[in-house]
Structures are given as structure tokens and as C-alpha cells.
Length: 446
Image (cartoon, rainbow, N blue to C red; front, top):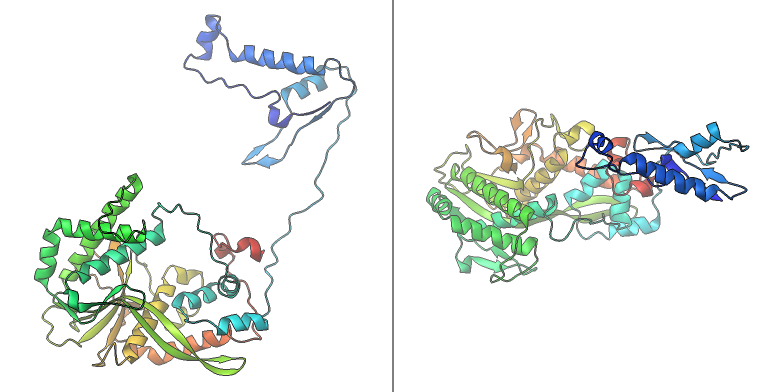
């Protein structure tokens, strides 16, 4: 007979939960845990009564801070029993192996995949800088991160998408139907520049139904994936909370913009791309690089209302619903050398915003008057202060004109891309091992 006596729970542990305390049960002769233990002991010993060879096992491994131990029945047999008892210990022969974190050499197939990239995005570059091996799994092997979020839940990514769409819809509503045209994906985009006045924003803040209606449309499109204005979604509790938070964020954004008015909207969710020369195995190749700008606007050079010239200063604004960094990179090499400290400064955001700003600065179409272009990150949660300025800082100095960093930024960017496409440089894991904790590819890497 073979029985398992794990953690003293053979027979099954006794549940003594009751509204009547043990002392009252004992005093009035009610059934107590002692009776249940006695019944368990009876069944156990009757089970062993006619056996000739018994093997009792238990596991003494530590799990969740608790160490397994013998059943009380086993201890009783060892102390009071007259039968010969032989004790044996079984130890697993395997030892846990430490992660090797081996590099992966670049093969021809890997380089074919990289050279076939249609568009190099800032995320493409930031992923490589954070961990070359994570970049390999994501972009070379094409392994997407598992999506374990329920389709009706609002995670951080979906929350951000809803807010971005709501902000776009809000400013689109100031345009005439003739000022909007569908892009190649069918989404409506601005054909002409929009002038936004303080009166426009004051009227919008007074019209509560307008903001509610816009946020509801954003929820329909981004969360429920329904393109039907007559559809009325049924929100659960968490969705209702997120809906109210996004409404408050949108009103916060309007109040921020009200201090800048009048200003001009040049583009919303605007595609900005250019070409960059990269050294590949077959020589120099022009690769397309860029992405989507949340908002491109023009404001007075000093940030005050009363702007008379459209091209005094152009801002490349990226909305952020998280928290603003408490520190800023002191120099440009921190943006291209992402260490553990750089995470606290959102250097990956810097790379994205500065890249878009350089593209706008160099584009005759996006910046025909060759006005100064400033990169900005608008953190909605931290934008309540009257002196809040979303323009990025390098050290303590705001980047009011990206031209100051254009040449150095482009040179460093080419250096990173040349490294990515260099056949002799393998895909190596990061030296910052704490990044592996939440990496979706950690099991493959180890």
C-alpha cells in the first residue's frame, strides 16, 4: 500500500471555521474539530489494519514560504508503533541551470528580413537599444508579445489609444466637412490648417455633451471596434471609470491649449517619414524611417497668444497619459545609450519626438516657411501648472529649435542602424539583467 502524506494532510485537512467558538462547542458538547480528527484517525488506521507492506511518502520541499513536513499519523507510528520502519530520502538529480544569455549570430536570412523592412519606426530602434536579443525575437523572428488582456478590458495601451483618438476627434470637429479628406486607410485627415481661438475652446468646455459624445465615439472605435454612430455600448464598471478619466483628461488638454490660443493645428495623427542611408552587406541603402505624429501645431515663439505669423514656431506634440519624468537627459548620447538610469528619463520618448521634429524641419511640405521646430511631450496628468511647457529639455535647456541637434542626432541614428545591419555584430542580450524580469521573450532567451 502506497500513501502520500504531504504536509500533514492525510487524511484531508480539517476545516474548523464556524461562527460558534471552540470553547462554547466544547462546553456544550457540540461537535468540535477533535471529533473530526478522531474520525480521520479511525479511517487511517483501519485502512492500514491488514496490510503487510506500507510505503508512506511526503514532500519536504519549500513552496510559497512553507516547508512540507510529515503527517501527524506518520510521526505517531514512528514513536508508538512496534513495526520495523525504514526511512529513505529521494533527492532530485537535476540542478537548476543558470541562464546562459548566449548571443545569436546574424545569418543571411536574418539580414534579408531586416532589409525588407518597409518602415523603420522609433520603436524598432528603441527595442534594439534596450536589448539586441529582444529585438531579434520581435523584428527578425516576428514573434509578437502575447495579448492576455480581455478584449473588453482597458489596459494601458488601449487607454492611450482611446485618448489619442478622442483628442483627434475633438479638433477635427472644428473643421468644415470640406476640410477633411480620407487618407489611404480611409481615416479622415485635415486638408487645411485650422485656427483655434480661445472662444472656440471656451464654448467646447461649456458643452459637456460634446466632450462626452467624442469620448464615446473613441470608445466605440478603439475598444468595441464598432464603426456605427447609432451603437450604444454597455459599459462595465471599470470601463465607466476609464471613460470618466479620459473625459477629465480631454478637458485638461483643452484647458492647456486654451492658454496658448490662438494657435494653428497643422496636422492630427500625421504621417511623417523620410529616408536615411544605412550601410548594409550590399553597400549603402536608403531606408524609410518615421511614424505618426499625434499633433503638429504652430504657436507664438514665446508661447504667448497674439501670434501674427503662422510660422513663428512649430511644435511636434506627442500625448502621454502616464507620468512625466523627474529627470531629463543631460546630453544627446544618453538618448542613444539607454542604460538603467535612462529609463527614468523616458529617453525612448526623446528619440521618437526628436526624430519626428527633424523630419518636419527638413520637410518642405510640412514646414514650407522653414520655421523653428520644437519637440514636445504633453503629459496630461502633469500639465495642470500654469507654467507647464511640454517642450523637451536637454539638461535644463528647452529644445526650442531642433536644428541645434540635427547633425549629431542624425549621425548617431545612422550609427545605430549601421550596427543593426552589420553582419559581424550578433544579437546579444542586454547587460541590464533586471530588464529580463518582465521581458516576454525571457523563456526563449534563457
